[in-house]
Length: 111
Image 1 (spheres, helix red, strand yellow):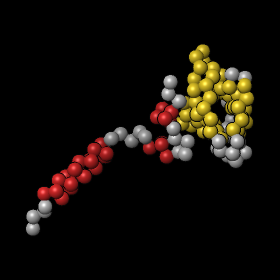
Image 2 (image 1 turned 180 degrees about the horizontal axis):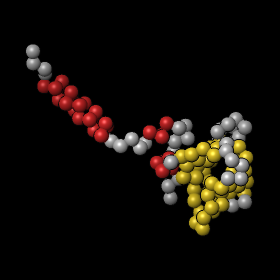
Image 3 (image 1 turned 135 degrees about the horizontal axis):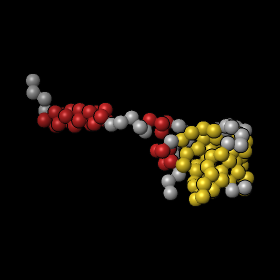
Image 4 (image 1 turned 135 degrees about the vertical axis):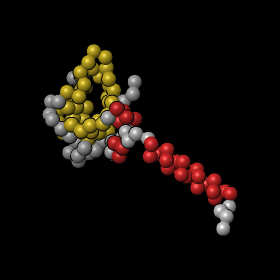
């Protein structure tokens, strides 16, 4: 029994697509995080150590920071305090960004 031409074409396209996806490097798997953002292409990470420097540099950098608990979090951005409530997220930009309290997930935003 001969397979109709459109079905054969469809099967061939699906086979090529499947082969193409298998050949791709597995680099974007980390996008499963609820904090997955455009900055996660270079890596997102969690931080909970009080006083930990998120960023210090001569040029300002931008990060998306999300509280990882119902208790919220607090970061210092160029000496200004930024509070995050109950799993909220915010974008910050500064030369000195430090975690003051809580547990956060963050990723660097593109320039």
